[in-house]
Image 1 (cartoon, rainbow, N blue to C red):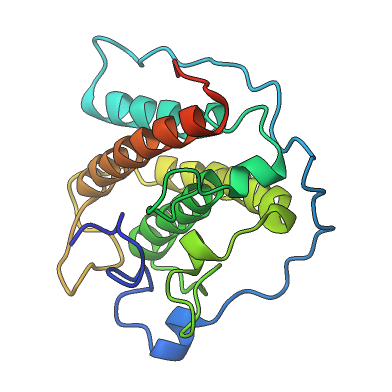
Image 2 (image 1 turned 180 degrees about the horizontal axis):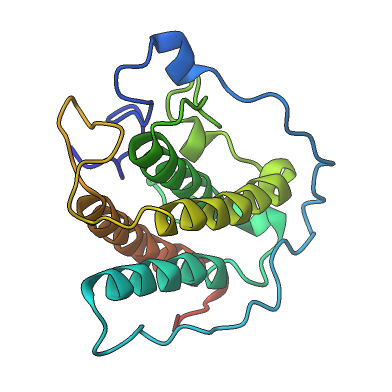
Length: 212
């Protein structure tokens, strides 16, 4: 099952980690809650260029993932904390903020835990709230959550760049199976493509903006 589903359907914890390690939320991050009318992201420059048209495999994979990370920020540019937390397309409970939180956990899982074998705690999910990435974000957490996305994607990009080999097995496993960085990068591009489509619809429902 795709790990782009809510975590009640697919959990992102480290393969083989004990339950308490896979579900303990981080508590060390602190920030002043954002005012509901605060604009969280503004002035993002659109530098997407589709990557090298005659590039090699790694250059093309890296470029698409870089552009999709930027695209996620462009889709929330100019919105307030309250707008980010809105769930404007019932009966879906999706929000732009929930997707940003989810993509943060996805990046950390694949490029820190699976690729490099790090042992990490979940950011947002708990045993009581396995869909905490999607469900527990609020206007008050929006500034912290978006900042976390920006920091973690930058860190994950650095870690991926440090892993040169696309072919050999990475340090972690998924469901007990070995996999390589080529598979991980392709999967992350697929993950972003799916959720960016969700973000298109959510943004249009919030303020009518289209064309990203």
